[in-house]
Image (cartoon, rainbow, N blue to C red; front, side, top):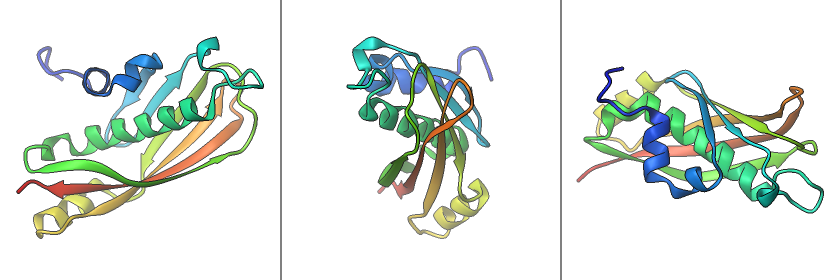
Length: 150
């Protein structure tokens, strides 16, 4: 990456205010995997002292956005990435910092081929949310689309 090119984390922090509000940390952002961390912050705790469900949702959604930008950033001149729908499951009590790891559910090449064919492709991004001890606290799936620019 060139020194003049902003990182995926910098781009998301600059364009998505909630990323800055929650102080999300970008640990990794590649076309294969994106990993973000939500630090333990009392201002965002719920009634049982862990991260609020809304903060965990935002963490996971932001991880999905990071992998979408990393995988399809070269398509932004002709398509806009948009989240279509999301489903989240909270599995275990989260305490302390939590990490979200996002992976694409289809290959980027398949998605770009549909875009090349004049279609509006949809693709899932799967996110695992874990505590520092590695226990899974949540799972999320977000379907994204690349909407062709008119």
